[in-house]
Length: 410
Image (tube, rainbow, N blue to C red; front, top):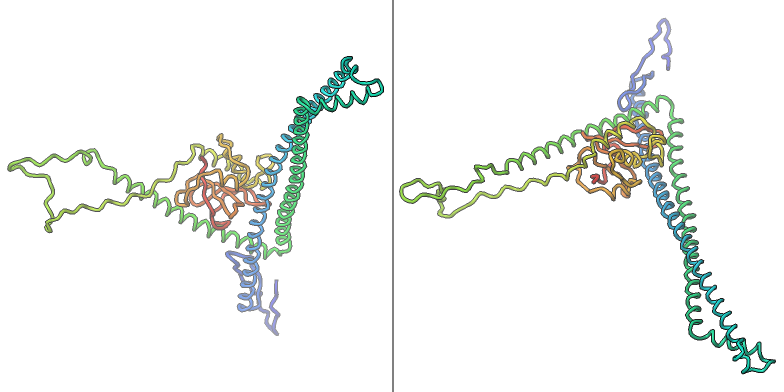
């Protein structure tokens, strides 16, 4: 606190100036209204800038988490392929060994045939070994020997291809692991930077930042609620227009033909211009949104049971905590619906609908490429797992930023 200096024979009271920074800040003393106003504006500017940076760090952390999850998927696929390749190498090695054994048996048989009495009688004793070797070599160049040679060469080539494939996949694994470490480092850096900013802020500034974040969230909630009300009103009007255009049984019955003679006719009178005109056909109402999955209410209820559970990157269960896509996957799994692991994969797996068609249970996506997802619960609000240091909560759909897409779980 600041104390106003006393004057001779008179002591002035302390002046308490309430500083409002983005809503409500702590009270501080100021020597004059002008300086108090400057302090308020300065604190407001600092708080707003820090809130902007924290929101940007939240986005960066979400992108890094999505990249990290993507590398997990890639590694899982690569390990599966490596296991399959190792099996194929064992099979190829077996084919090579079998071909080599057949070739060896063939050469032994030819050698033994070359040493028979009839064959030996045709050559001199001094040239017996040489003649036998020549006959074996000549005969092995023909017939079955050529087939065995081809099979052996093909088996060896196939084995080498499999080994090369394995080496490439192992190199891919190392590359993906490097990407994974980089994504993890970016994620941890974003979290550490957020914590540093909070730690460096004095109590008054931190209160101002939190007040600014609350103000932004309240404003986003107000806009989201207004937009939701407009959507619901438009949907109700479209449904009412469609119901009004559905003919009743009486209106659908064909009109009775006009009677001959003096009976009155039900036919409409011709227009004064002598021509006939028909009323323009009413415009068709907007098509109704596709139906939501029957498990939407159950998925929302499951997600709400995790309110307050802290964010955990890579997490997808109550025991570990959740990241954004992990919460969506787990919640829908509780009603028997399988979703992919990452928000990008969930975006690809759901049915695209417009924001005007959104209903509770639909998934709301952010970013291009997608890096965050939440579940719409109605009234312009969604439930999601925001970022490290924050719990599962219900927030306005517009708080993070512009919605890049809405997906209906099929």
